[in-house]
Image 1 (cartoon, rainbow, N blue to C red):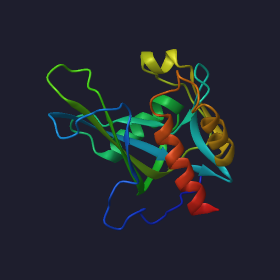
Image 2: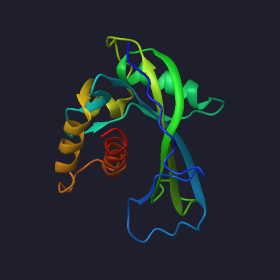
Image 3: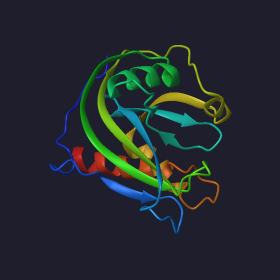
Image 4: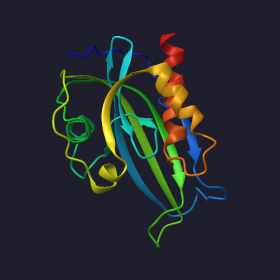
Amino acid sequence: MTRVFFVKRYNPAMQPLAEIHRSAGIYIGGKTIHRTAVRAVAVRGDALLMVYSSTTGDYNFPGGGVDPGETHAQALVREVAEECGMSVLQVGQEICSVVEYDRPMEQDFDVFRMTSHYYACEVQDGFGPQKLETYEANLGYVPVWIALAQALEINQALLNIPSRPKWLSREILVLEFLRRKFS
């Protein structure tokens, strides 16, 4: 069983850890399509539960979009089960959030805004069968336990690659934040 750790929010006023503009020239005041996502932060010893992409070589926190009618906790339970084949035993407090802006795929909108909420989680031991979405299977998602410093170093090395995953900057920011909090 993993241990749950709790930290105070980065900002007591509940402001996001960061806002990231994935593309230049985005007018964030325009008609916006919103997405809310949740991400699990589970620790075992000095290792974090991460999802490794065998296609892109990066590490990201397990999680994804909150479906209509779901709570954040329900979405975390579902996402960790799908991506890692694990049960979430406890959802702790929110650690931080990150807001990202990008160009929308939908024609009727000016901007895509996604807020990712990171929660301390306790998960069962052992990986079970995954239930990946097509894009996740194509990325070769594999759940792993990895040292925070190692995941951060590998992700940072990918920053200079033009085909890097669009979420890489977000995950690096959160890994750096966790390293500062627990060093």
